[in-house]
Length: 400
Image (tube, rainbow, N blue to C red):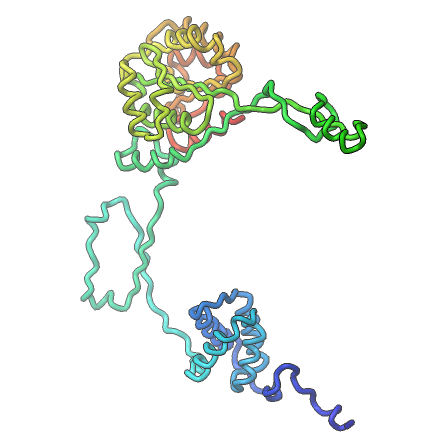
């Protein structure tokens, strides 16, 4: 009995496993890695999910037990790779196919092949020559075509330089813009967990019923918040023609993307286009707005247009506490004194006045136009508006 206890212990749970010989000559570690990767690739093809870390553990186990004994390799793989009992049947079939098929001795590395990367260019794809399948020089060369996205390029490209195809792609990107809007305190209240503020009598009485009528746990209310109104005044005069169609698309995204948004077109007169831009179809909405604005691509009278906005909508309530965004290059044929007076009126009632000038992106830009020079002292934020990236920045400015 004592001699049996002193003998080498058998592996528990593995009745037919031979004693492992760990002092055998070992193969190089990269060869064990290739064996482990080959078997794991077979298991993944059979539908088992084998993580990369498990593959590394299996390769380390093979380095310890070797690969010349079937039972040793089997239990090394089963202990590291077979994670669930329901996977054992699939694992056993895969191991038999792998071991009996001689896959354990395939340790030769794959021959290296030349790889050619083909990058897209600005040329049309139809004009690119097709590769000749009978060309002997290219027969042993693998070609990988690498395509790139032009979205990042379009983000910084000037709207005035867009091609029709680029403008169609930019419209899809612009549809994803969302203007959250700055928040302001509302007269409505909401429940709060704070122990101060306005008492919530209804909730306090309801809680008092649980404690015999004693108001032990009192409830309170606090003022809620809601987005400020956003007013967009877009210059559609002739000088803004290269940018007007993109900026009106931005107006449409703002109108359909959130509530409490008003849109106006500025030219020789002021035209309200909020209802026309309310359609979910961008093309139909912009076509309706274009038909409604009779002075599209005409002259510019910014001061008179802002005066009309102040008299009919702004001072009466639409601009009070709102974020007013004016999208214009600042060219005005009217009196700059009128511009200065009306911008001062608008600034007194608005929460913030933001001026978006597409020409500001030019390195040589200076606010020398009479209308721009008169309006600039009454502007809180002066930003660019020539590209998608600048409009994304504008969305962040509006949300402050």
